Length: 132
Image (cartoon, rainbow, N blue to C red; front, side):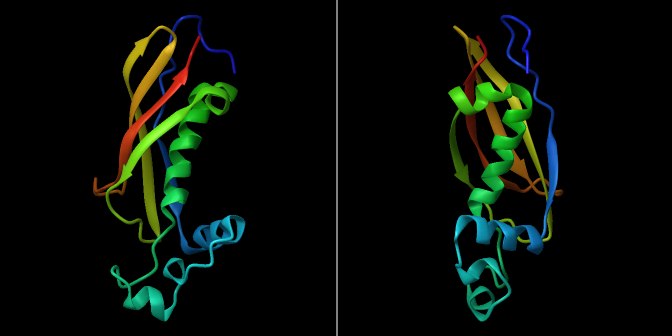
């Protein structure tokens, strides 16, 4: 990906459906067998009363949206600082947004947020990457 010289990218929002199938595939890939992430007595008895998506699965959407904006530069220079605010209970449509906060000396900093369709914030924080 070639970025315009001297300008940080405008990053478009990204929406993904996080369903139980995706959560199950993520659990296998991450080697995370925690029963709170699948239909189970543990999930039903847990704090949310049903399975929840992995926090890192939701966070991966931030990385995906930043990769769409920065390409390889995200992998080479990107960093994240986020807080999880609310669980993602599948099936859920999650929208990730990144708004440019500052750009100085070749480093772009974005406010990032992942929300459900009603605007409930699942996670928020900052993402930064070099654009020069």
